[in-house]
Each structure stands twice: as structure tokens, then as C-alpha cells.
Length: 142
Image 1 (cartoon, rainbow, N blue to C red):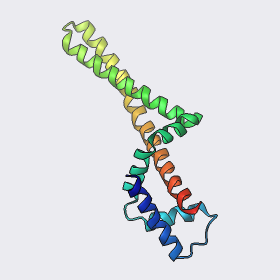
Image 2 (cartoon, rainbow, N blue to C red):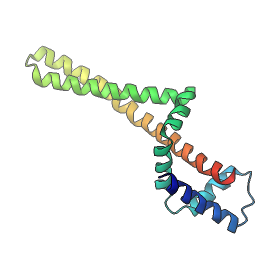
Image 3 (cartoon, one colour):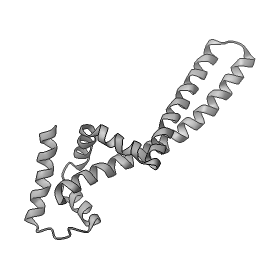
């Protein structure tokens, strides 16, 4: 995988040399250039995150804001698990009084879990995309 990533980044770099890319200090133009000249950019980004997963997680846990998204993501997974557990308990316990209580618990934690899961997962995807783009940009433009 290492050779594949380096080979694809090198192809983009060779394209920059062909076009005399002079916007060295305009980061947005560099990102646009990478997107236009990389045929399989999405796969390249996934490979970069897979290869550098621990570096990416170190960056996420090192930043206070990004760490908050990650912790909220873990809490939402816990809430969804707790909700599923409460639903299973309602199927096992036949008492109407406990049945209603467990359903209310499951609904409450399920709502919190789904709401947090989607928003925090999207934030982590955004940071992974940004990390991989910055990784490519630094390799090509220095």
C-alpha cells in the first residue's frame, strides 16, 4: 500500500511539473489542482487514512475540539448500545410496568444516540478528509 500511495502522489507531482504550477502559496488552488489531477482521489484518501490511522487519531485526540467530537461519537455508540439492551430487556421481561419503563429508557437513549452518532460521524469524516488532503498537499507542494 505504501508504494501505491507514493506512486499516485508522484503522478500528481509529475503533473504539477508539466504545468509549471506557480500558485505555491495559494492553498485552495493547490487543493483544486490535486482534485482535478487525481483520478482516484477518494481511494487515495482512504488509503492514506488506513496507513496513517494512528497519526490521524493522534491529531484528533491532540486537539480539544476534535477530541470532543470523538468522545461524543463514543458516547452516542454507548447510548445506542444501551438502547438496544433496553429493547432486548422489554422482550425478555413480561411485566407491563417494566415493559413501559424499559421502552421509555430505550427511546430516550436511542434518540440521543442517533442524533449524536450522525453529527459526530460526519465531523470525524470531515477531519479525515481534511487530514488526507493536507497529507497529499504537503507531499507535493512542500
